[in-house]
Image 1: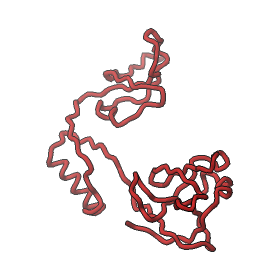
Image 2: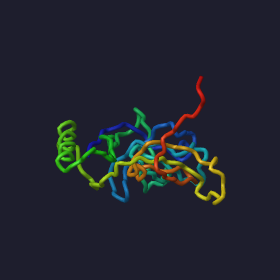
Image 3: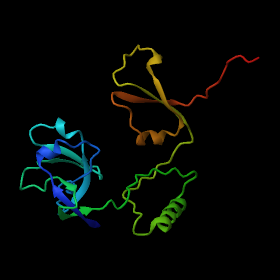
Image 4: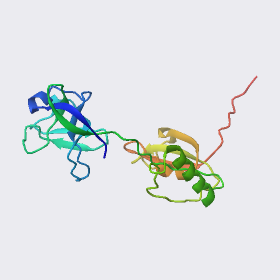
Amino acid sequence: MNTEKVTARRLTAEELTGLSPQDEIFVSAEMDGLPLDCYAPASLTEPGKNFEGGSFTARTIFGQEIRVLPDNAEEPGVWVADKTGEEIEVLQNAGVLLNLALFVPNGSKESLESLYSAARDAFGAGIVQRWSEQVITVPDVKVDLFEEPARARKNASGQIRDRRALDIYPTRVRFMEPSDGWKFIVEPHKEVIDETPTI
């Protein structure tokens, strides 16, 4: 676990109300119930003045949302960098976790192994890891992807549709998310033919 020592001071709830989401703070680095005796860089999810009841919500750079009571002496509290403060241990941002879906034309086990080996050579054998692997045969077909309201009327006009993407493979749809309140409609791809008369 990589940490660095940062000189910081603990904030009171009153001081926290004057901060905005752009201000950098430090909160407990606890992740999914795993107690870590250090802090993580974070920011408020909304301006401090909008919170009521003394409880604040912060989001760490690792994507964790944490509720904090800054004035509670039994909790780690909220800290801000200050040269006149005391030293705290801060968890470093050691890298980026990528969720990859790889399409390998005419893919075979050998070609997948070659990809994996190349990635390990580029970034280091101890860095690149397979968290989960699912091999799916992709049909040689393209689809058009539309988005429409999730509760659209059955006889509604097709004009309400919003074309989101063209010429995609069906398996890619599984890695995309529709907008809030909308759902995906997948149809066989139709080439767009421009019938505009030309002179």
